Image 1 (cartoon, rainbow, N blue to C red):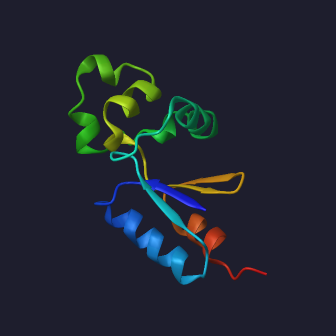
Image 2: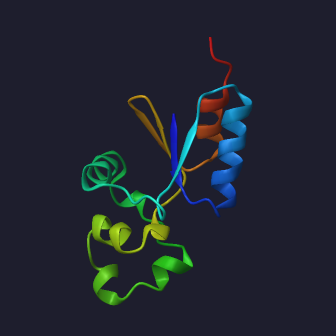
Amino acid sequence: MIIFGLRTCAVCQRCLKALEATGRDVSFRDVRAEPLSEAELAELIVEFGDRLVDRTSNDYRALNDWLKNSEAEAQISAQPKVMTRPVIRDHDEFYLGWDDAVQKALTRQRE
């Protein structure tokens, strides 16, 4: 399992700790330090579409008008902090965020 996010993101850190506590093998990738490749970003856009961009964040509001009117790929490539996080990949399944539904799906006891 891999978590894509930011090392400084409190939600990402809670997610990482909770998943590690279940005994899962989890790796963390900081998208600022190691940006998503074009193929990875394209795969996430197919999965989540525009939901991949957090339009409520200060980082999004700070984007220039050209970027705000660009595709999600351009926004995230230019400013990785606008990506909604965490993005969790568990084999072939993807999860966006760390809400109750995602927590329940990923922290249930493994059989």
